[in-house]
Image 1 (tube, one colour):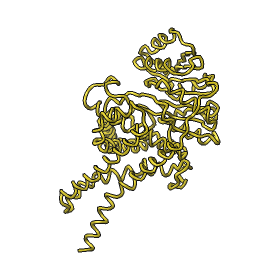
Image 2: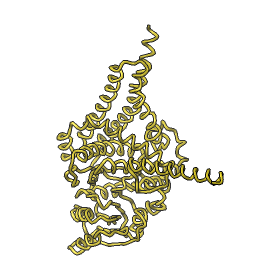
Image 3: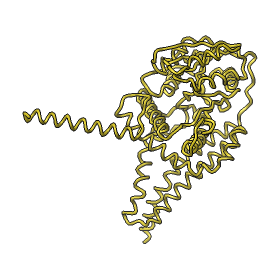
Image 4: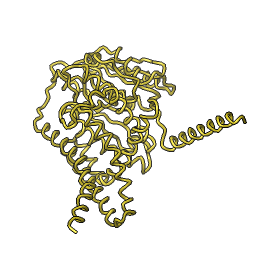
Length: 449
């Protein structure tokens, strides 16, 4: 009897304790790092003279979003005469240029430039803007993003105070569905889940990575560079769908002594993802992009996975990619335990305990962010506190999408256009039918029909 109880305890302990060890400890370490850094933090003074900043905005069919982006730059609490705005069009055909002309015709102490390239892609557009930039600092902003009025000021202040900084990312904050121009219950839930996800990713995740000098990706929607550090690299690479991750690795490898960090006060607002199909396409692209970059820098995988400082690519791949498979396997095997004689009540109770654990993690994460974040974030967290109950289900869905991205990375060439699951299923069936027909034809030819 004792042996049976011990076996059951070990068996269920593995199922219930592993999530605590894998996810709970990682979150705890990040929280401790950020908390200690916050306690040690000192105010960063304004520089004696503010530096010039070149802002590069790659755009494609951005007639509905570019205006808001440019308006947010006009409202920056930064000397406008020190701003150079370069809009690089990637072959738009929806009136994007008219939006730019309207802004360029209005009074502005800085400079506004328009560049046009013939549909060469985002990486090419960014590189063209970088070569045209004239200021010592370069900021890249997506055309559908809106900068907080103090975003550039915070970036410049930190870079002028610390000359070891090579590049930085800000905090990405997701707007509500209504602010994003979306209606419906599903878009509303996606928006709130993304809001909580991004808070954890930037206020804890990227800040923790910055403190341990292991920042994996500079957010492509809003990044800030020391120009000479950027020019030490091959610039943005069009061979990967995750050019922001690739440039992060390039700067780390080629600009010796330069640090990469996250500056949480520098905020950029982005619209929420409009649908589950769009969310799927986004996460598949991100997942395959990370794997593509890891393949380029595979020599870093051998670094000790237990090392907390510096970029331990092996540890990142282990947590972000390898553990995807057992997580999903556990999820599907757990219900199947009923067929092996385990009572349904026991299986449901175990699943419930794991789900409650992840709800508790989401709640603690929100509480941690609440203690550090500005008033607008705290108000939204209070208003939508109940969403923490959905975060584990949302994260499980993201795991499924990321697993699909890992599989697609092994089977398809890089592309920004990602099919949704239904389209991929239809494509797979068409491919199988095509192969079947080819085999039938070959058989008919060999039989002399």
